[in-house]
Image (cartoon, rainbow over all chains, first blue to last red):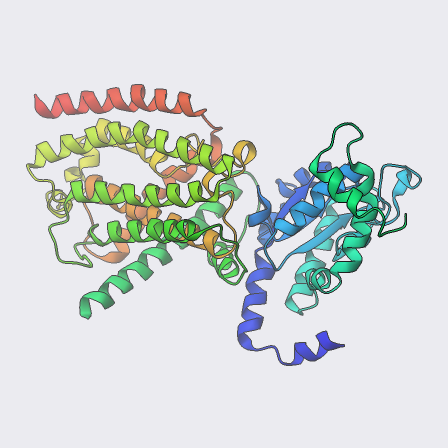
Length: 198
Length: 294
């Protein structure tokens, strides 16, 4: 509701900036699972998403959109959170396929998270197993519309509800602490062990 | 006051032309690869977005380095005659231009080293190694032209080629032009000499820690560097120009050659690139120098 009110006050400058953001989305594809293989065809001559100004970038600092392209294991989740927090704002997250929504075929795995949106805010989930390049392009165009209308603000939710996300992250990341030796991660998650219930 | 306005105007012009060239270059590469490609004004959209983003800095050396990089190239641009006009009325000396051009690279090196990222350090060391590689053949060609014309003023060298295409140094010294063109590919950092950027190996090298406004500044620096480097080539080999429109058109021809080579070549490793630059263009340049001297 607040977002809608904010939209009414949007000035020409805001609209112009959103137009720039919409037409120059730089993506960082974190290649987990099988979705990464759909990206080369969508970038090369058959589907060519560069015509919308969408290009792959090499580092989180330069990227606007994080693509999580498949199931996320616990160790991967640790990296995804690091990458997400390294990206400067505004930033968006696209989750590919059913694995990032309900775990897909890994729904009962001890080592895989089932819903990515519990750990980092997800703007758009793309349906399919795996989504074809058409679906990827459709999702990116939906994201462009969302940016232009000022809706795509899930990164604000991460700051507002950081407690919720941090609690969920700690709950699962505690399992990734190394069994042998005492590393930094282990001590961090062991201190907090008493606070949260599994 | 008027000088300040002129400097500002020339800087804006150089940035505009550079960004336009970058966008058109991306479009041409896309057409070569049978893609539709982004619109020709894509570089402006990218820069607009980058300057509207939040950016992360590591320390003030990084801020200063980025600004020094842009300022170094903009001050180089002031001494490059654009169709006989110059921002500051001086005898545009080639040696001064060469010295000032290095400041841009050193500023970028400072900013990248301040970020402390190992990828950035590798990228910077590769960029400075590449500088050793391309400067020797390029300066040899320049030396030949300076000896032939008896002056190191870029403006006078451009004026001496007036009166038709047959008077151009490009036609008079084809070997020198070839060597300079190969070296220019490395100066611009395009393939096959883009080992310092190399997104797939070292995550875009010096730019690895730059986000938001810092990357925007890097974009502007690249745009000005395109303007300066093609401008020097037009003045040295294509006889300058009588008006600004012709000058920009000639600059675009030089940039087009670079882009066409960029679109079809893979990447040299850094030691292969330096070895190539020190053998092939260097020997062509030495032959040209010998022809001029004898």
